[in-house]
Image 1 (cartoon, one colour):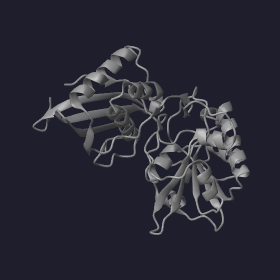
Image 2 (cartoon, one colour):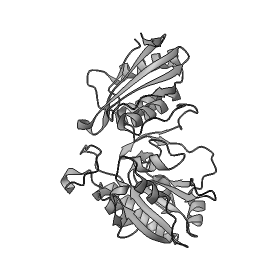
Image 3 (cartoon, helix red, strand yellow):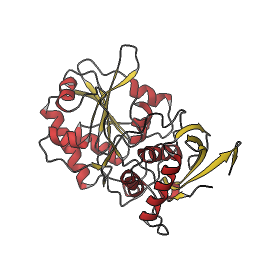
Image 4 (cartoon, one colour):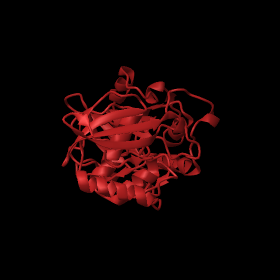
Length: 331
């Protein structure tokens, strides 16, 4: 059995550097939005993370929700000022009913229509239809939602790519399918609004930017569960071969493990990466929301990766363990 990489956590907080993909950014994207025809999928603004909550569809009292921080209120108001500054026509405004999303929508765009379709963790036809709907002529649509809705539906958006206060802008192409036209990161809103950019802030944590996941990190679709998203985010950090990126992953997203110092955990990662090289997921079971077992190819052969999470700890990962297989059996 290979060494355990324990106490990792769910990394929705990692920033992804955009590849040279032709996506619109900044002034160019604002100019396109002035003509209408786009849907702005905005993740709620920055939140107070002193309250850790699980992911569910229930709309509870405000005191039981993670709400906007003072930085988040500032971000949402800034988004509104940028929309007005560039004369972006916004028609339809819809929001998840959580306070952090509805208030982001109010500050940025105006009073929203509330719908659980923008909160549902499980994909539904109604959710897909909402994302795919066309704007009214000459306008754009604003949908204020959560990271998992954006990651599920927008091509090219991987877990961790859109942080709090950030947006993916989509449109329907000639074949009637959804395409990513561009994205607006927090630093873009700040630059467009004439505000000094906040240093690499995403989802309430100050973290360095990290590269996009290595090509071929997964040859199969992973289930869209808490454990599945943890696996994708972990692969991004693991395949970088960079201890700084792994440290970011550990600090930003995992349940802390007082029994293992950061240096020990990073040394374990270095040993694993030196031994196995980059990993490519080749098989994954359905598992449960809180556990996923996947098989991956490595330079040393097939590896079994078991990811566990805990709903009682905000849907964060509790452990990621490795085992080698031989002849279809775990060593």
